[in-house]
Image 1 (cartoon, rainbow, N blue to C red):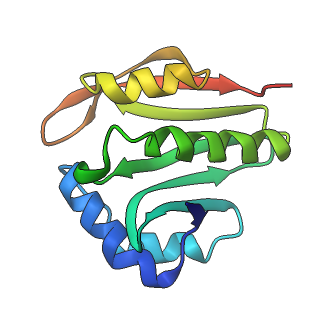
Image 2: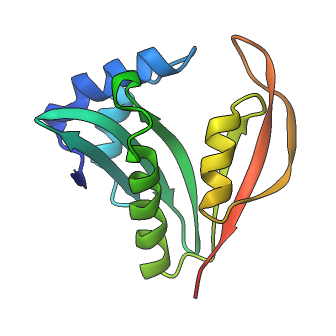
Length: 145
């Protein structure tokens, strides 16, 4: 079930974050996201556990996907797909003209997910990521009418 993130979700969200990323966000960073009116922060809850989450920041007419992850034990169940549907639907309702994101060049599963949701490649940011050093693919999705 997709719902808005709550303060009590932060420890589980952070655990997923740590397991998914070499340079994870802090629990404080996630708590901060709950306090911003311009941030969409959703979780997928399965049987009382946080299975995945997504954080997106809204600007006047565009948005940027900051973070999305699914716990390893919940992968291949359509959770990331559901989170992306929720985010893109919210952006379309709010008339966001486009959504941007960066993704590791080697992250083929994420790139395929984004492509499925209408994102196209804009370019590459050389050596954007650390640990390991890697290029970022910049992707964009234009508003669906």
